[in-house]
Image 1 (cartoon, one colour):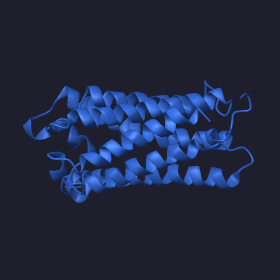
Image 2 (spheres, helix red, strand yellow):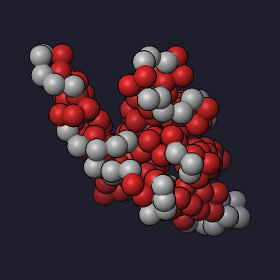
Image 3 (cartoon, rainbow, N blue to C red):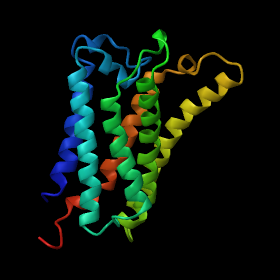
Length: 208
């Protein structure tokens, strides 16, 4: 049972801290409907945001490592690779915080934006690829994890649709939709997806 603690506990701690940011000043003034999660990093509560993201990254790494250790996921597999890209991208978001594009372009801001895209896309792909191996002979759990992964990609598709409408002559994509709400729904969906993927770790290891 010990293998579940690093992943589930770290992820839950990180998630709790992000929720706490919406209650603590000055980040309590940030609109969860219109402003992205990364906006917290531009405030005096940046250290809380950074700690939350690092905890989620470490929890995710522990989750995939535990699945590999249990023999449920090959270490050298597309699922493990996309899981690693998700984890690394989260850490990149901490090193390169969100940029205020109103003051002009920024290399760090561009890196942050790319890392956000990689993270949001790679985690659901990792879950999709891992579902069958992690839940052999359990079609119900396979369907649930795949559904969570697919809905995560659909949330990201909402953002891509807004970008497409902008390119077709519409207003800026970030005002076409409640960006903060969509991003938070996407992030929650992905955290639920990785949580579902770690359900087999709740069972005692055959080697303990």
